Image 1 (spheres, rainbow, N blue to C red):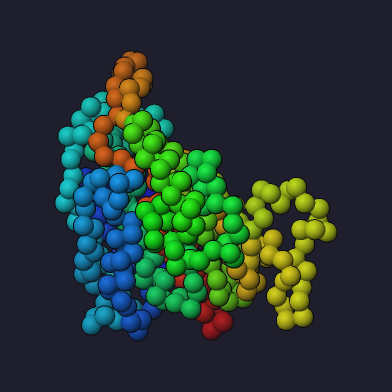
Image 2 (tube, rainbow, N blue to C red):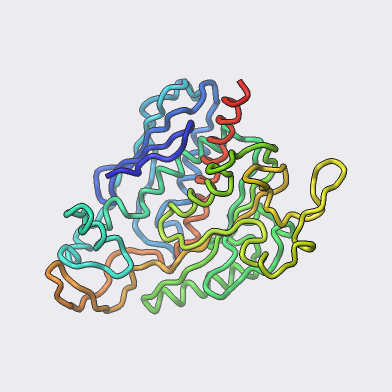
Length: 354
């Protein structure tokens, strides 16, 4: 299986399955001499871990990261950083009913067709549990590019939208509620709605907005390595993501060019920011902002019809511990992938200037 490594200079390779002994990764290319706050890395993992509230999966995993190399006395050595997160609360028997059948909208069928074999326990390698390793790498990347501020939050659940502009939001409120929406009133409505969906044995999707501030001018490489292209690839690599838009996004098609153009100020900043902080694939110093759309979780705790390995139509029902809405737990994953992209381009910029 290919495709387990992301990055050009700051590289992350991940390993492990949802119900295996452990998941983990190796970070290559991280510079030496970075003082790391290991507690902050664990805090990022705690934001993603299951069982943290009534509106997420109740799988109980401490998600404690153990580092094996690349860090000495809290400082990076420049050598590969190896780490693991042990799985401690697997309930593989929850998945025996799908051993010989395929769940709709999961990777079950295509994995079997491509590899002739699959780990049916929680989806194995295709499980979103793999993203915990990304959060570790992202937490390290954040500390490397510490002057850049990355804040992601839930801006939509189903049809419930946060109508405020991100500039009018207090990002310190993101962690004040289990939905991770920085507007308390909207967050309460979203939480009630997710609980209602969960009670029905169903799931719902949503949107995460990410705002990146204090980005230096010059990150990104034409032609195929544009900054927004890499951000899009990073976000679309996250489980359940169905869409990515930055700046004015799809709404920009409704404007005329004379309205959409970002006019300059004398200091090189722009009066508007429809470009989303990126022009010609290169950061321009303005805020980068984008939306990531997540589909409803594919596993619904309801009866459904599907096919087995022999092509027979069968009836079964979803079981196990699953998120009724994935977006609250995906907020730190979005931030992590954004940080990895920015760390990679920062290092690439250094290489070009040498």
